[in-house]
Image 1 (cartoon, protein in one colour):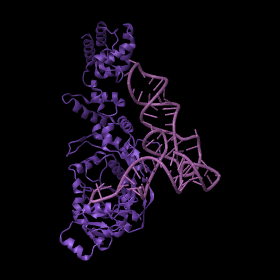
Image 2 (cartoon, helix red, strand yellow):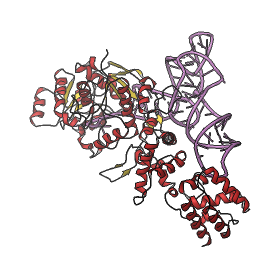
Image 3 (cartoon, chains in turn orange, red):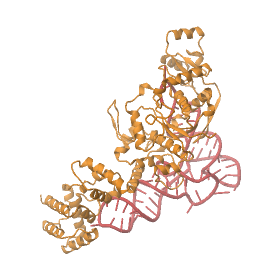
Image 4 (tube, protein in one colour):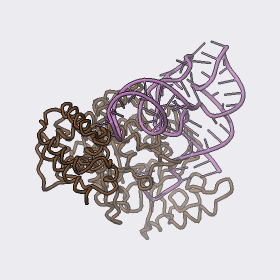
Length: 510
RNA sequence: GGCCCGUUCGUCUAACGGUUAGGACACCAGAUUUUCAUUCUGGUAACAGGGGUUCGAUUCCCCUACGGGCUACCA
């Protein structure tokens, strides 16, 4: 059965998208593009209690930042809309009713307390938490157990009710998972899941199946946490008469915390000092702030590349892939089966690689953004900014390191006592004076020329070349790191260099 | 507890019955660098355990152990 590939990313807007969510979206996108199919965003907001303002927009912003272009969704529209489940509310009831009529579902009037009571009443050592299923439903308040009169009575009193799927006893439910192969469940282990809630909204299980069917979804690529409820979904497809339209399932392994075990959570990020969300997020209820990969300084290409490799591998030794290259190389077959621990070090490495690859014009644009943030007052020429950037390009992890760690490229440094103490005592005021007048007559043509000239000067003055260069570095940089001294001198120019030597010398004498 | 999924260097992973078990990150050492990085070279380091199947198992099957997920009128 060949049908057009249509995949959906279906998050619920209960907060910011985390790493795992973005990766699920990424894999859906890659698969869609690889197969010349459509990538769709559907917002699953059937739980009105968990609605978080801003979350929906956050999801779309995050996908956009990561470069995962949608073919259909809330903003792009499409002929299968609306794409927000709350906007499709009136659609679902008829399918729940259809299931009741065909005998595959039933109405249940039990209150929360009554269900609790059942669970404690039937609890046993073998079965500590009995479920609402073929064994217990006959003892509950529903249209299967109750007689006609009691049902009418409950309905007349407007007793709140839900609709539950009637899961059969002891039937084998099997399906082919694209990642895990054949998965088999016995229906007796399942419970009669609520498919339609008393507030008039469907639960995930129903809404998901109805929408996937209506939107002609061909493949469901989602997290592994959905594997246990997939047999319910399979049953729903059968009972609704849509078995031949059931999508292929692919259940992704989870992203785990770097240390220990378990799913990666926001707490791990806070604890270990790295972001777990793509973009910054302010929780509107608690005002809690969470840092995003974008704000941390990650390039979107590096971020998606890194994410793609958390649970997938091309099978070759290539690791750097643009989004388009990922599309070409992607296959569900190569998705791994086990959970992947998130490794922030490797994420940093990916970003470094992408910084090194940046074109001059792109790099310049990014540099200017950072500079305007740090030095809103100052003006620098593009030529200067790019030269400065290229001087430190291969020693930075993030573009913003240029202003956070290399400010001396744009303003004179301050000289703290600890750094001044590292200047050799052989560097005296007399020496500084001589140096300044020497440099004053020096052409600033090339770094090589400057270097040999300075070496010669140090030799003539009988100052150790190491001591001298260290002094020069401290004057220019304010610390013992950075590009080579002659390169910096050429970049900054004679006047700035002389000023800094003067400033530094003055600091020593004070 | 039950059900389901998983298990190769510290981490991400390659291997689709026969390899000195490969790569990357991290780490260590050396070279380059008058600093810090970069770069280059080299190194340490893994098939969870036990049974089968097979001429031969990291690879296929079973069991055990361990890890994870699910077990809501949440998704």
